[in-house]
Image 1 (cartoon, rainbow, N blue to C red):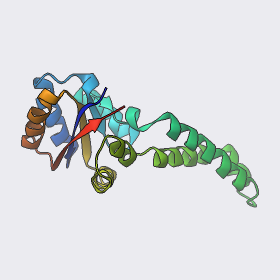
Image 2 (cartoon, rainbow, N blue to C red):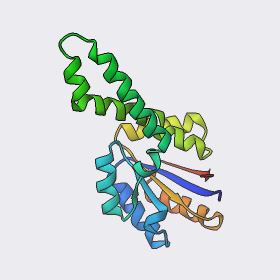
Image 3 (cartoon, rainbow, N blue to C red):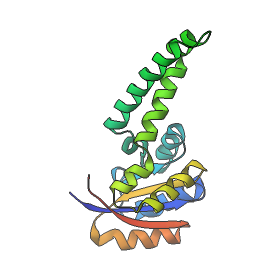
Image 4 (cartoon, rainbow, N blue to C red):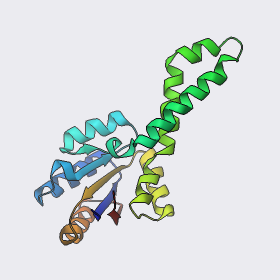
Length: 168
């Protein structure tokens, strides 16, 4: 069912953690709060610290996974014919890493945000900020609580707050 998704960008993990505490004080649960950071490891650590869910769970769509897997196989097949390094790339962790990167590019943060109604320039700007170290919080809420959350996150130091409509 469609509902508001309040997105807030923070310049540092500490600022995002303080905002998460404020959101929890308003009754936001762990399942409603997602953290998006520049790596899955960082997301996981921040999510545990903030009592939130990692944004990677949202980003890693089934389509992205399939595209990543397919890309890994294609890159491995091409690498086989490369003299000297083909067997290393084909059998090694590089093939898996390249496939995973291709999958994330296909199902990245900007794509998910656009699906939620965030205009392309804003979704791409948010993704760039996250890639540069900012932390994005996403809070699934009701229409009645969206304005209060927007104000609370802005007061907590968000450099940007956007309310989108989550349709998935």
